[in-house]
Amino acid sequence: MPLPKYLNPESPKRKSINQEKRIAKKGFRTPKSGSFWELRGDIRQENYVIEAKRTDKKSMSVKEEWLEKIYNCAVMESKEAGIELEFSNYYIQGVVIRK
Image 1 (cartoon, rainbow, N blue to C red):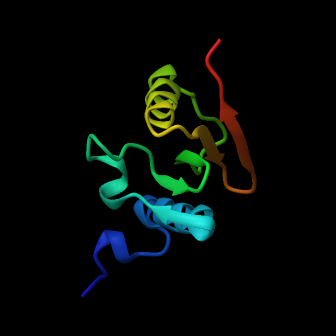
Image 2: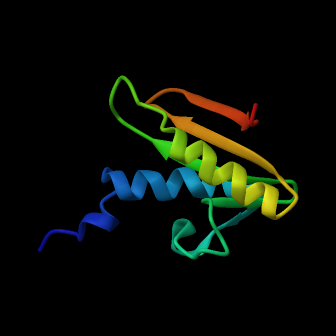
């Protein structure tokens, strides 16, 4: 019998969970990956609320709604907003700042 998709180490869901766990070593993962209105964002650290996105493809579009969501959540908690984009061999980490 095959493994459920979320247990397969090569599934996109498992790779996203692994990314969140790696980032959360200095904080904690948000339950349900930010689906609660009072706990948006994927990871919480002492001074940051971080949104994590990943892909196995060669490109990824960054949506303004991601940046707006994480920025507003961080401001409500008096923290900085961060984002990490993960590609197969690279990480891009940054701070989200509104103009």
